[in-house]
Image 1: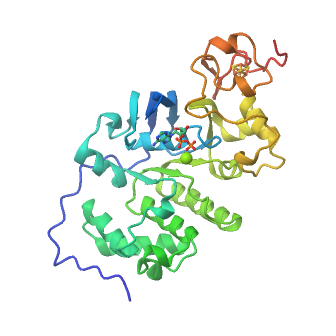
Image 2: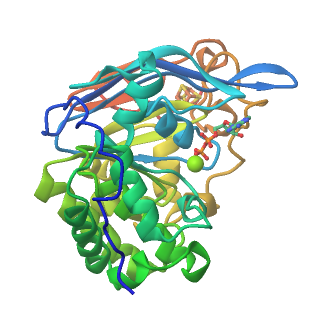
Image 3: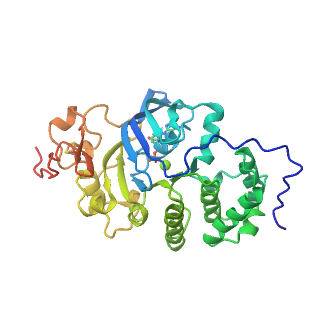
Length: 352
Ligand SMILES: Nc1ncnc2c1ncn2[C@@H]1O[C@H](COP(=O)(O)OP(=O)(O)O)[C@@H](O)[C@H]1O
Ligand code: SF4
Ligand SMILES: [Mg+2]
């Protein structure tokens, strides 16, 4: 049975939302802090993050579980939910302005239409009572898409590229699809409205290695064909090495190092990035399994309130690291936040 697209009986679709320019937008995250309310009070999950997503690039965000990656992703859509809230900072998106200030209908329209996204655990986010096709049509209608047939064609095309039988998937309920299939449906829904900013939070975790590689290649292809600005979040360094132009390494709610992917991987400067890469025998690996890096990442309750968040695990730790949070210093296209990294980019090896 095919998904029928009966537009005539429907109430007229709302007019197209005011358009942001259909070109890759730049995104500037400035001084962004998000706190979660806990029994111990409001604690920061991310603190003072500065990050630029350059138009037309894929930025990979990596870090162990709990480093604040999903919180950052949600902030780009102003979608942090209670008990969390954006406590400070801005997220400037070309054509939309500061999304931290958007509310209600403006925000709803921005999501989906201008910002396509796959949240973590997207394989569980479909409505169990409706077929994928019905949900696709709901999505299209709620964003004022007038040509729903074209939308269905586009969805089938995307699903087909990801190795699925599009017609059959659109006709299925969530429980009829495997975790990996649902994940691909999530990616399709993120891309199908032709948003030019795409945020993918752990988009391939439910997939086997081969499928993962295929999906990443397709994400890269679609990114290039459409001229998108894309953020891919992952705890798998192999994933970013594959697709990202730039890399941001998160630890304890901070971006500790960022720069062009090949440079960061070839000559990591921050002790955490160096530890991660040293801990991974090949350039494909799951950070959570990087056993050679001693210790565990901090949690909301244990992340140091002052000094460097990485100091408990750092071999280069000095006195200043106890009390002074390292400023983020630029070195060419690289940004690093570490007292042991000199302005010229060299790392002082001796520990105090
Ligand atoms: N709803 C919530 N309530 C309380 N703490 C939360 C909530 N969501 C996330 N956190 C905490 O915020 C920190 C960052 O979480 P998250 O952004 O999910 O990190 P990541 O995606 O890198 O694993 C973690 O310490 C996590 O436990
Ligand atoms: S600031 Fe100090 S503790 Fe932090 S990573 Fe650099 S040397 Fe290590
Ligand atoms: Mg996450």
